[in-house]
Length: 482
Ligand code: NAD
Image 1 (spheres, helix red, strand yellow):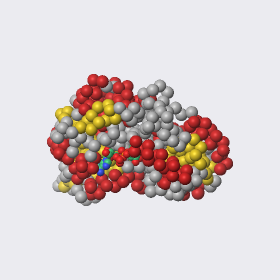
Image 2 (cartoon, protein in one colour):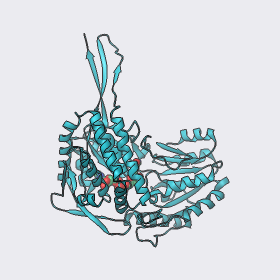
Image 3 (cartoon, rainbow, N blue to C red):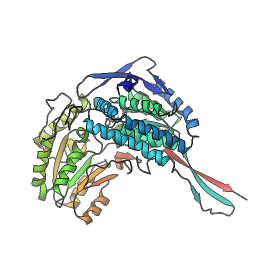
Image 4 (cartoon, rainbow, N blue to C red):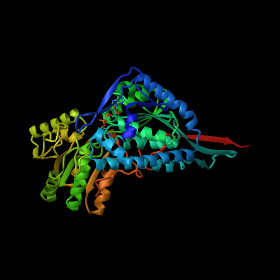
């Protein structure tokens, strides 16, 4: 990435690597060391408008290319990402903090959306509908929506972009990407590889900024933008929904979660410990599908907790680029203050601190792997998205009761449960008000399956055969033939 990194201090608009018009820049900081990696342009509404206009101009020709042609270019981009996987993973760890192994996994996961949607591009079939009147024929066409705004968070700075840009380009749309302000470099690196792959100027644009509200307003209200695809927190998602309403844009919202993880009395406890560990502590707990509430049945509580506490106490905290690191830093000082505040408040209200509960000696952005028991649903830590390496543990002894408690949240993204009872698997799966359910599995994300939430966790699905539909309009043709 050293070669690529030289090009990573500019934004990317209309195929040009450009600075902010006023020359302003913002630093990008390594959360593990606090050191500045580089600076990126602090763009504003003018650059955002220029990016939209460029995307619209590019759309006029991109939409006319064949699906096979677009698929071919996406495949070259995919190959380049895989070829640069090591460099991209190092860049990702430096700006986001996750351990190298996880970063490498994210690069490959991110790349998989490009490959998948390159394949799907060729299958955006319309229909021939049997006519209802003599002398008529009915057809449907699927056509690209148009210019897409893609606003993405810092916690998966590659995969959250490819999950949107892959299907958008495959469908024939063009995009303006606004990456998370803490992690613009991965977005720029991906754009650099897209440029090398021969994806034409204006088809992908990247606007970097420290002022997401100003840039976001243009990107979510400009009449030339026909769709907004947003991944981020629920409050910002609601704000963007309101902004997009005036011009009735198509929207996809991948928002926050509050995942319950239930261990039933008949669970395989070793597997449940491993599942809970990975679903809680991956990315230091900064994942939208991270376990936020761990419910353990009374009958296996002591057995499960002994093994779980032992496993969590072994997790190695450190710089993501250091060998053996399992928990990297939180993204910034604000995140540390939030997590520490929630833990302290829960303890004040009667939660029992079993492990951790403080900033780590490794550095000011590192938080100790923490376990709290005797947590109640009234505590803020139980109903807010934690986004840190902290497990909150609840007890239960009745299936109906734990389902009710699991559903008792405005969020509905991911839920998990462990059991060996087949009838219960169906009962609980069907009763959970969530878009994604992991059953005896702690890792649920893959490009081939639909990802998305219900309730205040959002609308729309990414990945899978459904993921491209959000970037297509259905046009109905009614033909009189006599
Ligand atoms: P965030 O909502 O603060 O920011 C997300 C993006 O929105 C960033 O690019 C940010 O710059 C931008 N933004 C902020 N204010 C804006 C505004 N007024 N107008 C336009 N854009 C604006 O979220 P975050 O802290 O970056 O990410 C963490 C959140 O993302 C968590 O809630 C997490 O659950 C969620 N998330 C959801 C999914 C999913 O698939 N459902 C995946 C990853 C993260």
